[in-house]
Amino acid sequence: MDHLLRNRKSKEELLAHLEQETFKRKTISFYRYVKISDPKAIRDMLFEKLEKFSCLGRIYVAQEGINAQMNIPEHNFEAFDYFIQSIPEFRGVPYKVAVEEKGKSSFLKLTIKVKEKIVADGLNDSTFDPSNTGEYVTAEDVNDMIDRGVTVIDMRNAYEAEVGHFENAKIMQVDTFREQLAKVEEEFKDDKNKEVLLYCTGGIRCEKASAWMKHRGFQNVKHVKGGIIDYAHQVQEKGLLNKFKGKNFVFDERLGERISPEIISNCHVCQSVKSDDHFDCNNKYCNRLFISCESCLEKHKGYCGTVCGILDGKPRWIQKLFIFKPKQSKNGVFRKRYFRTKKLA
Image (cartoon, rainbow, N blue to C red; front, side, top):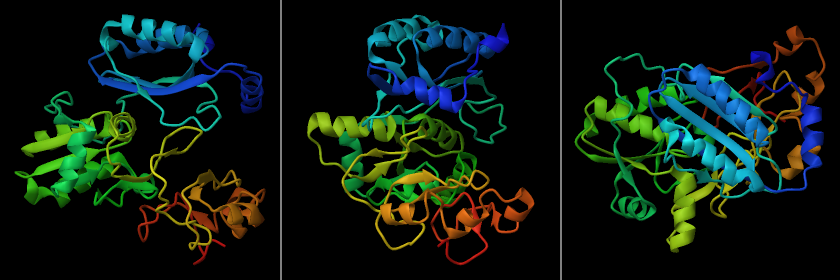
């Protein structure tokens, strides 16, 4: 029975099926830190029901809660909502609706996995309670805190912050959330009595981070309710000044939502043209997430540089001579892989 509760179609089949759809989809995300005694049973129940609703997306279930990014056919949304709210552990959970859809599906298939944690944090402290979080703040609060010069910390990875962040935010040059927690605690260890504001994409990382910082002795930790996604909606609905500049990076097929018209990053290939559009390198061995302008994307035919185009299709051992994974970001520009040359082009 278990083998039936997962996607069995190829990417080509999934794309063909999506192209034939005549209805609209709504992209949402939601999460909750809540004790789940049997994550496997919840996982199987979710897959069986959500597949019937033609839902697509990625959901993680763990003993500490649920983390979901997905889209739902608009005509099935009411039934979807009724089902989710009927589960005691998730009753009352709020949804964060995507800022923009970009005219394409944000996901190709439904994937639901049981994880050790819904956000990998590298923490191993049995006394830590992730539900003891800092204070939520609204968009109005965020703007006021920025104006007052409160320390605002971006709890996302460097490559996310590269394309968009709040004014004067403190950005850590890290590639994972577990690195982020350690870096923030060390860098702001002398500010434990000061007011600090945390933010992330949809709230799940900064909520856990606020609880961890409280656990580690920070006295006045606050975090943006609903993250950047909710902030953008509140700004639009209430006519507030938007203090987020650029794009909000998202972990689905869209790779970003436009929050403000500013483009604050440069093309990784030519390193001179303003761009904040992410792509995956066409060389499957590389598969590097990179920012490219239209000219470089066309010039290199979807590769992140000339070298990758030349190497594509060559044996893996040859590609390893030129492409490798760095341990951390360099010069403030995140790249999943770097060439052993000074310039990507």
